[in-house]
Image (cartoon, rainbow, N blue to C red):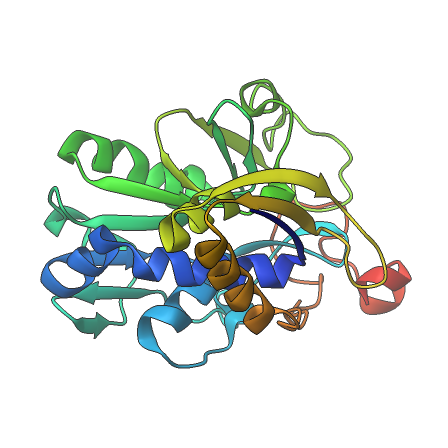
Length: 275
C-alpha cells in the first residue's frame, strides 16, 4: 500500500523530534551516558519529545534564518542548551562536558543543508567556527557519534560545492550575516525519510517540495509498506498536522555584533521586513 502526505516545516520538525527521541541509541546515551543536544530549532522539538514538556523552542537557537535573512540570536535571549547525563538534565554549555564524552555518548547537531550524496552543510558565523569548530574534530578523535537532524526542506544539489563558497572575509555585500559553511561527509543524518523508517519500518520517498499559503518550505512524501503500518504512520501524521510555526524572535540589528550589512543600523534605517 502507498500513501501520500505533506508536512510543513514545523510538522517535519515534530516528526523528526519524535523519531530521534525514540531511537534506542539516543535513549541509551540519555539514560546511561551523555546526550548533548546542541542549539537549533529542530533540536528544540527533539528536546520536547525527550522531556515530555513544552519549551520556548524559538529561543533554543544561536544562528537562524529568520525574516528572510541569515541572523544571530543574541546571547541574552538564547535558552541555555541542555545535556543529559544518566537521566539528569545538566544546564551547561556543551563545551563544559566535551572532555567527558566517550563512545556511546551522542551529540545531536542541527544543519543548514543536506544533499543527495549524504553530505551535511553547517553554516558557521561564530569565532573559531562556533559549535562545529569546538566539537567536530574533538569528537572524531574520541570516537563519539554526532547525529545531524535536518529536514528535507534544506535539500540542496551539492553541499561539497556550496562549502567552497562563502566565508566572512570572502563575502562583500550580504543581505544577512556573513558566514562560512562546513561540509560534513561522515555524519549520521536523520531526515523525514529516516524518521519514517525508524518509527514505522516503512520506505519513504521525497515526492515534492514547496507550497504557499502557509505551506512554504513543505515536503511531500509517499510511504509504502504493509497496510497496517501505513495506516499507523498516517494516524501519527494526522496527529501532528497543524503544528504551529515558531514565532519570530529577532533582536534589533543595532548593536547585534554579527558581521552583516545591516549591523549597527537603527530601526528606522532598516528595510520593513526586518523591523
